[in-house]
Every structure is written in C-alpha cells, then in structure tokens.
Image 1 (cartoon, helix red, strand yellow):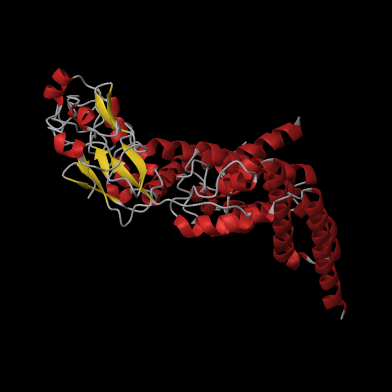
Image 2 (tube, each protein chain N blue to C red):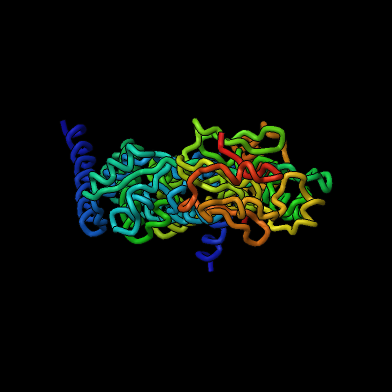
Length: 196
Length: 259
C-alpha cells in the first residue's frame, strides 16, 4: 500500500506538478518542432517516453552498481550522455526497421532526442539512489515521458486548431506556438505545490 | 595512477559495451535498401512537392526503382534530372516541359461580399463561393500560396502563371478546390479559358466571359479537334494543328492563344 502511494505520488509529480516541459522547461526543441500534427506528436511523445524509461533504467543501474560502488559519481554526466546517445541510436534502428512511417515522420527530431535535455534531466533526477529504487526510478522516467507526451499532444491539438483560426499574420508559425506554449505552461503552474 | 586508470577503464568499457550493442543491433535491424534509391533521391530536387503523384521525393525514388513509376515525372527537376535517373535505371526516357494553365478568366460577377478566411477552399464551401459562376476561379489565391516556387501571382483577382518560374508540378491544380488548372506541355498553343458547364441561358447571368456553347469552334475546326461537350468547348490536343480557326470564330474570345 505504501508503495502504491509512492508510485502515485511520483507519477502525479512527474506528469503534472513538475512537468518536464511546461514547468521545468526542458526539451523545448522537440516540443515546438514536432507539435504541428497530433499524430506525429503522439509518435514523438511515445518515443521520448520509451527512451526515458529505458535510459532511467540503465543510468540508475550504472549509477548504483558502477559509479557509486567505485566512488566515481563525478563521471555521472559523461556516462549518462553516452548511455542516452547509444539508446537513442538503438531506438532509431528499431523504428526504421519496424515502423518506417513513424521513422520518416519524426525525421531529424529522432536523433535530436539524444541532445534532448529532458532525457538527461530525468536520468540525473532519477539517479538519486537515496530516494529511488531501481523500480521507482524507471517508474519516474516513464511518468516524466508521459508528462512530455501529455504536453506535446496538448500543444499539437492547439496548433492544429490555430491553423484555421484568425490571428495577425506576423504571428504565424512559431510566434503563436510559443504564446500557446506559454499559456499552457501558465496553466500547469496551477499544480505547483501539490503534494501527497 | 589508480585514480586515472579506473575511471578511464570504466568509461572505455561502457563505450565498448554500447558500441558492441549497437553493432549487434545494426545487424538485427538492418534495412535492405537499393543503392539506386539513394542515388535517385540525391538527384531529385528535394522540394517534396508531390507533383509526380507520390508522397515526396523519397517515395518517388522508391517507386522508380521498384518499377512502378517512369523516370520523367519530376517536373521541378526537368530534363536534366530525368536524364540522370534514366541513366541510373538504364532506360530511355524523354522529358517534356510542362506548365500550369488556368481554365478561367475570373470574369464572373460578384454574388456576395466574402469576409471569411482568405482561402478558396473555405470560400468554396460557403454557398458555392462568392462569385456567380460555380465552376470558376474564386480569386482568393490559395494556388499562389501553395505554389512551391512562387510562380503564381493573383493580379486583379485572377491567378497569373509566370512561365519563367512555373515547373509544372501541379500543386496548384490539387490545391484549387475547383481544379481549374491544367498541366499541359510546352507545345500547347491554344487554350479554352472557361470551365463552366452552365447552359447558355444561365451563363448570361453568371459570367460575361464564359463559354456559351455556340459550337462555332466545333463547326470551323478542319481537324474535328474541338468539341462542345456538356456546354463547354474542349480541345483534343492530339488532333489540334494550331490553325487558329477556333480562336477567330469564338464570339466570347475565351478560346485564345497562349502568350
């Protein structure tokens, strides 16, 4: 029962209260880049969720059993980047083989997950072995990914409707997307301070 | 020494581990790709205009290699690209330069004042458009906005194709809610500038320029190349010898030479 409460609290925190995109402002590049259509946004969100879950598992294991065991915590950043880069390459190969349509629609943003600071961010947060066990760390990673999915799908939905809306011509494209994202972030600020 | 060696070994070991993992995954998830696809894709302009009828330059390249498409469909790349592709594929193909022509003069009367979104598709859905002719140009310039090379200018409510820029990709034809453009080869000399199937009596009320189906062109044609079908003159370009009789005979001057 205690575990369930903890998992719920982690999910609530990662998805709503401390949403990586809208509250922590990490991973803005794919958030704006791939949010033109809901379909591709869902694909990108799921890819990020998958990478986040997998990378938190790997990074947490490496942190716990390699870096901390040997007292090499200062290698954290470079080792995590190595792990994430390798995983993204792996996901890319996997998608190209099994879901070529999604691979084509994600385009350059798929390799860009490598440099997506949200993925490194969640790995570093989840690497705190005093708070997370291996299981809760992965749970946290997947929740953070779902938070990203939620944010990018919300924005994609808004941008799809903006296509047919009337607004000043100078605002076309990214300006209006940035304003929508800002308003969305403002709404998410309403969750701040929630605690279970 | 130990403080340097151990981290270096750990990092090197991790690098090696992931390198091996990726190399292994590379073999498992290998996607077989014909190298001709890449060669052709590099040659294609990369505009992804869809003028060839495929999803984009990549889709077209794949279709060529799999034998589903001929080599000369890329209008943007022109003769040069067609020649290169046919060399790669080892076949013969000829490329004909094509342009977009508008089958309308835009002369219809205004029926109501349209104040909605500046887009022909929306305007077309609102009670059949703002103009009195339900077949003709709406003049809001969706084609001009869609043209990937900026070859269409809307001058006084009529889209005008700049032949120096037009590549004949056909995006305008697919964008126009009424499909008023036709992509025709360079050799085309005479065109019917109307798309209305309205009867003669209705035409008087809808457009001063439109085809009234008088059949003067049909009677004057020595080659039997022009026919009035469903109240609209149509030219069979396979038969047309560019004699110009129809241009002279047309009382509405909508059959005209292309400038």
